[in-house]
Length: 131
Image 1: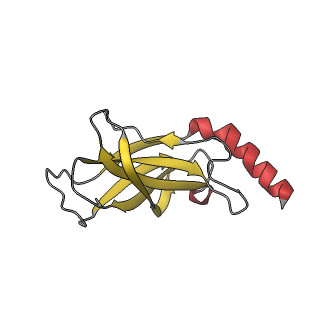
Image 2: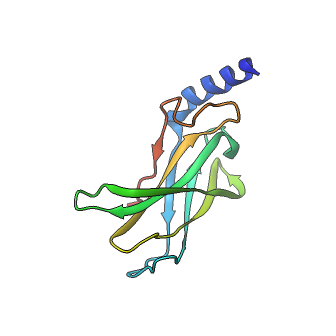
């Protein structure tokens, strides 16, 4: 098992820089009510990895004047369908848990059942808005 984790870890370190995101999408809404959820989708270029190698999460919360999130929450996104030409679609939900200026993005972390923490490799990819 330790050898398997070491091989997986090396694979992640080599391929992580090739991960890409596109088509971060959510309905365009001027108002979103507390407790109401919206669907978020994103496509991730896997570069030979599998969706099981990644933890794709919505990252949402209140946005302050400095554009930073406060009181954030995360929720897992799930893969939908098969990857096409290396691009895998993920979908998830965001739901405001209070009132105020609310925002979200998506982050990607490595995932392995033997990994002590998804942050232990120091790898994270934040989705970029298209165009």
